[in-house]
Length: 337
Picture (cartoon, rainbow, N blue to C red):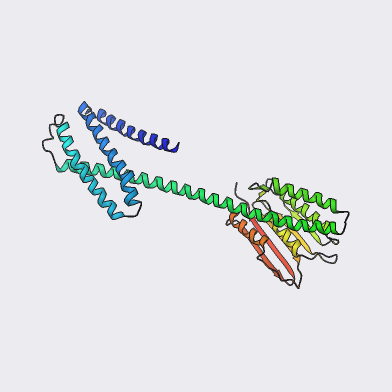
């Protein structure tokens, strides 16, 4: 379809040129059968030069960066066409043009060369511009395909990682024959429904992401005997706010994985602050003094990569540990409407 569109565009361009020349001759009252034949032959020669440059000279020389060879070939081509056209014009149109008394004249040769040079310039400009646009479109498509494939790969790592941790929690409840095991399975079904049917979208509503976090925290509370040290605060309005799915959950999972929860102190603090154009999500958790903190786990590495892909130049992720307390802060800037 694109090929037919290009052909139609070229045909329309040449027809428009012919109509414009005839209109110009008619306006100057110089239109005659001889002039029409002269214009037709002239346009035919320009078309030959145009497409010879388009299909032969540019691909063989200019596209391969052989600039000097290209220039030399163009000049040779223009000279050859001038030498061929001069006899045709002389023998075909001298009866219509009494001033044409010599086969080769400097004025006519210069006229042929300049006309051909303009055609070469237009042909090269259109060809190079078209190639540039096609290459940019192709590179953009490849970039989009690569980005989509990488995001799908990262998300495929996030979901099994999350499921593995949650199943371990439910296994712990079942092993202890806890009566809360059915509730844990129900919570897991809600989490899996979100992951399977909604997290495949590029963006989800912030309300759904927060509900998912609440379900996860409730599931963790079923596992923990002492959960007075878990706190989740929200400031600001979540209405009409969207976010890439499963980004915030990585920090929540990390807090529960490494945090220590007790009755005597707040072991895990989660806070979400929503502004007009920015979101700040932070977690604070006590960490084991005998367990070395590693910032390069699968979850955090995937989070960094997804942020770079989904929020380039629109995010800040800070991870820090001080005296047995781990701080994680993620700042996201919403895309302008």
